[in-house]
Image (cartoon, rainbow, N blue to C red; front, side, top):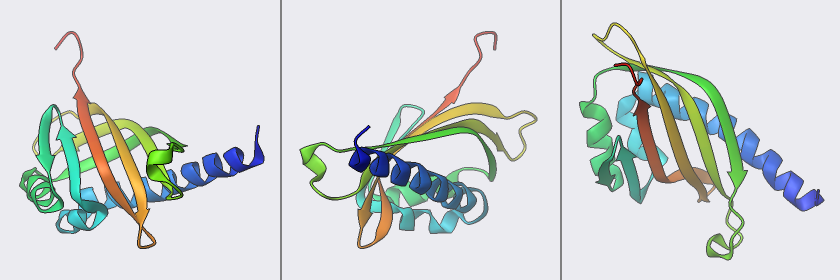
Length: 137
């Protein structure tokens, strides 16, 4: 494998681990800080519903009941197409369990983020969250 590509993959994986810890800690314990993680014109797709702009995304997260997320798997890859030029941009894929307050059982979820470095901070460009329903429910 090309050494440059290996370094990009390693950076993507390290960044994904650090970023998702910050993201889910904020979502579960400090929702009022969520907008700081998104670009101004970010897009969130939550179970098929679209929200655009970091202020609207902040309002959306704030309106959800308190939650606890548990990560089961995490993966990341660098996006190296010319569209992102020399800017570090990564796709992060997460799966896990989410349990909302007042619900007896949690639900499995999948989430995909595209993040990019902006002013030396990672910002979410797009975020797609989907809970997984079992076939027998």
